[in-house]
Structure formats: structure tokens, C-alpha cells
Image (cartoon, protein in one colour):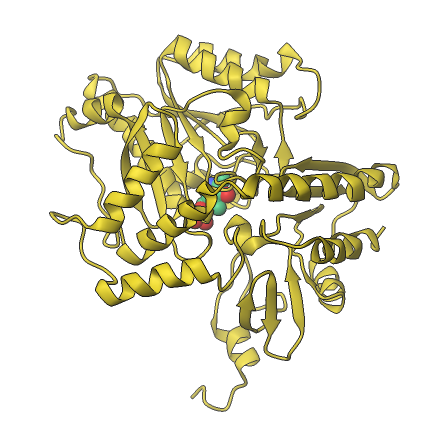
Length: 423
Ligand SMILES: *Cc1c(COP(=O)(O)O)cnc(C)c1O
């Protein structure tokens, strides 16, 4: 039935892409190969990648070290169940994660995607309170947040502004504080925390946990906020004895100029969620890391265990490439690379603040964001970028870059110049 259809037509008529319609899909481009920071399309066009495949591919595509790790593991075993079984790569990864995160974080739960690590973290918080004999179901979070597409995760995404508002009636009702207004480099304004403080004080008896993205609110608006906000959140959580879940899925592994974005605020989370670049963008893998104390309390709850266990938990191929990713990062070359990207973004993008088409420019580490005054025509701008030899995928009023750390000056110039030529 499908034989006569071209691949483009088949894709258009039968395959869902992220957040698109089957009736009226946005244009999709066929990628044949990817190497370094270059995506090579089937039609021969080469594009410089400004997206790192959504925050993940930090060391570039077809990376020799990552390839080698996964090939080596493939010969031994690609998967084995994690129930009642352990293996070298999982041991190594969990040791690595415990090593690179704050001292209190000692127990690792491996899952298969970012959204699932959020579900796991929320479930941990609920079971934690069950163990205390308390039924706490509310979650306090921020407006403009994004935590994933599954039900628990959706329930803590921005309630009005997100793509999930259509499911609102099906989601558990959580509590949303105003998102921070004080920017990263602004002088801290203590009033910024008022909404959060008020809601915590009002509802703390029913709140199981606080969940938020540290410093950078990603898909919910690409906002970068003041580290003091996060510091105050952490202090208030301690004061009210509420668990603090930090979602580092987008920001972790160096993207903001620190290994983890919460380090900007000098805090430590109770539960940490990692994903996206955990495997250097190679495989789907995520981790939820918590303290021994919290893990013990959960294990003492009525169920006598933590109630979660996905089929592909601790997948050896994913763990092997995650270990190789961390090995590359531990050489500490990422730091200067990210700093260079940040410097370049500042030089190129900050002058756009004078443009009457630009509302704001936000830069931190290897993240460069331009917020425009008017909505962007995605199909049109995507074609423009492809004609300029770059892969950039704006949404709403946001044009942003988060290139692989390995990008060279020349390639970075092409990326940023193609954006500048729009204004
Ligand atoms: C992408 C993302 C998620 C969801 O991860 P998936 O792997 O897409 O399920 C959750 N939180 C943040 C901050 C993210 O950027």
C-alpha cells in the first residue's frame, strides 16, 4: 500500500513528529548523516547544528569516543533486565553520578527518559510523605516551567502558557508561584521570592515537594533567572521541611557554564533529575538521584519499596555511552569551550537589544536566546536558515542557540550571523 509513496509523502501522512499535526504538518527535512556539528541532509545540503538535538548532543555527532564505548558494550550485551541483576556499566555510571553530584546524593534510580525521571522524583516525594503517615499531594512549582509530557510532568508545567493547557482538567491540581523576574545579572530584589514564599507558607502542610528548573526555565519560555531566587527557594524548603526536586534535564552537564546549574546558587537538591545530555545525545537515559536518608525513608513506607521499574532500566548500551560522556567531561575541556561560546554570544547578540524587533536577549553559558516582539513564522524562518546552511528551530517568539560544545569559531560565526541577518 505504501510502496509507491515517496519517503517525504509517507513521513507527512503517517508519522507524527513532536507537537505537529498529521493533517497540516510543518515541513520535515531528511537527515542522512551527522558528524561533528554538521547535519547532512539527504539532498546533500550541509547544516551547522545550533540545537544539539534539543540540549543533548554536547560533544557532537558521530563522536569517536562515544562510538567506541557503545560498540564495545554491544559485543558484550545490549540489554539485560535490571530486576535481580546488575552489571558493570550501571555500577560504573552510578558511581560516576554520585562522584560528580553533591555529597548528599547517594542513591540512583535509572530510567529511560526525562519525563519519566520527573514521574519517579514526584512519586518518591509522595512515598516519602506516606512513610511519615501523611497524605500530601500538592506540588509547588513555578509558572513558565517545563518538565516533560507525561501526566505527572504535565501537571507541573505552566498551567496556562504551556502546550499542556488542553489537558488541564485531567491533571492533578498543583500550586504555581510566579516565575522569577529578576534576571541572572540583575541586582537581587527580595520581592521576587514573595509569591513563592506566600504560597509555601499558606499550603506547606499539604505540599509534598517543590520542583523547578534551576536558573534556566527551558521549553516554558527560555528564561534565565537570578541565582538568589534558587537560594531562597532552597532555604525556604529547608525551613518548611519540604523536599526540593531540581530538574537539571536541560541544564546539566555544563550547558550553563557550571557542571550543574544549581551550582550557580550554591545549593544542593534533595532529589536531582538528569537526562538529555547524560549520554552525550546518543541514547535515551535518565537518572533520579537522592540522598540515603530519603531513600531509606521511602523504603520504610507502607509498600516497603519504591514502586517503579521500567523494562529498560539501566540499559547497558545507554550506561556505557553515559560513562564515556562523563569521562570526556571529566577532562574539563568543556568549561573553556562553553565560556568561549558565551563570550561569542554576548558580542554578537547583546547589540540586538537596540533593535526595534527584539524584546530581550538572554545569554548564559552555551545558551543564547533572542526574544522577538512578534511571533515567528516557523516554516518560513526554517527555510531561511536552511538556505543559510544552519539548523536552528525557533518557537513562539524565541530564536535560540545551544550548539554542541565542540563547535569551532568559524561555524559559530555562521550560526550567529545567520540570525543577525534577520534583524
Ligand atoms: C526535555 C525536558 C524534560 C523531558 O525530557 P524527555 O526526555 O523529553 O521526556 C523535562 N524537563 C526539562 C527541563 C526538559 O528540558
